[in-house]
Amino acid sequence: QSPPLELSVSPTVYLCPGDSTLISVEASGGFGSHYYYWPHSGETTNQVWVTPFSTSNYQVQVSDDCQTFNTSASIQVVVVKPDANFTIISDPVVENLPVSFQNLTTNGYVYEWYFGDGGYSEAVHPNHIYDEPGIYEVTLIATDSKGCVDSITIPIQIFKEFYIYIPNAFIPDGDRFNEVFSGSFIGVKEIQIEIYNRWGQMLFSSTDINFEWDGTYKGRRVQNGTYVWKLTYIPEDRHDRELFTGHVTVLE
Image 1 (cartoon, rainbow, N blue to C red):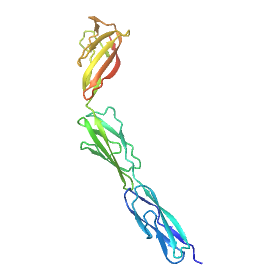
Image 2 (image 1 turned 180 degrees about the horizontal axis):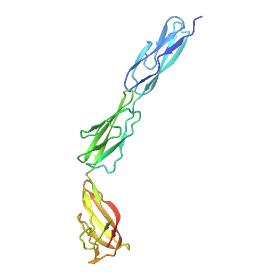
Image 3 (image 1 turned 90 degrees about the vertical axis):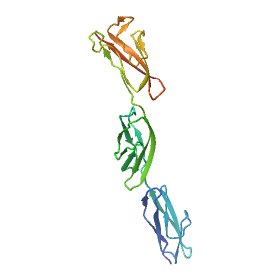
Image 4 (image 1 turned 135 degrees about the vertical axis):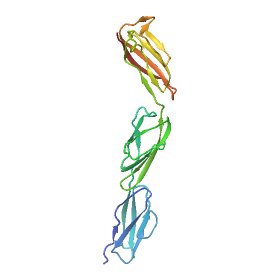
């Protein structure tokens, strides 16, 4: 009576995608010699090299001389890696202002950022300032605690610096201070401003980016109170008109 054929396999291995590892099986018992067969590759040795790109289970079949016993075992090779990803949380995304990157990587440990303009960072959630508008390829390389690497490249568009300021009050009382209603614009190529009273009557309109309203309508000063303005504008690096509305208070 021969002892039963028993198998002892190498332990579970954790490795990076594309790396190789040696897996093996040791047989005991049975009659005479042991014969090995790995169905995934057809190999007939007791140890084989494998190079999985995702977590895999490798089966091995073992028999003895008399084919009295035929048994199998499975060895798991776990493929681990970070999953690199990021997004931009700044609004607006313009030149000369910090752009904030939010790292969305899972299983990451160490990070390298290449911002596409020569800039570099190892911060988890970096900020970066672009000097010029344009499209930049941003690459994040993430490394996990075992040294496995993943990367992602995303193109981002940096727009021309853009700024609109419209005051909410002015005092047309003749003292030369805060005397007219006007706006400040950066990165805007066209505007149209319209001002209405509470009955929807248009009191003033202009397409001049340096417009000034002195608080009059048909030569007469309007009453104190709140008036609605409507601004349509086109940013310098875009073509679509955008709408902006608000209120302005005329004071004594």
